[in-house]
Length: 242
Image (cartoon, rainbow, N blue to C red; front, side, top):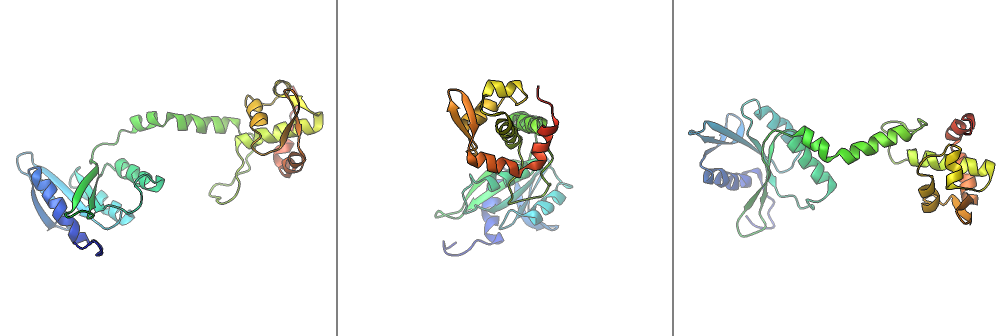
């Protein structure tokens, strides 16, 4: 195939056919609406491969239907031109794995097509996946536990969200504004949480300034900006100081 010519679904067939034939399968195309079927009589194994130019929902639905026939279902697409390290691509591959499908990429960059099996169609190990992502799970639980307001609306995008971190910063700002400069230890004694020192020290919002050794006060920016969250401030106004 000429490098300037775009690949077609028919161009994918040859490399896929060769791959499975080398594994000892008899390969046929267009068998009862299946793009490619590989059969091994000795093991009575059927492998179905669906050919498409893009990894999309249509292909995933088509492949899921083929799983009614066999557990061995592959998707075969041309190797994408985008970086395979991109988050979107990694998320798509994760979805393919979750659906227990195999994924084949066919490259036409060399003198002859080459084939790469990204993943095999095998049972998805959900417990193993959750264990590997336990850190993310803990972050979610920590965020939920530390939020005291409910300002965000599900489905919102392109707007600043209220986080537990920001709530803590607002609480610290409120106390400094009404009680004057204090140290992190003094603030924690009256009810701020264990991230008080890092919030003051890192000063992500530029709300705080060191006025003495270990003692912090509010900047003008901090005095103006924290007051734009009256609903959160009200939570701490109603909470008696420890």
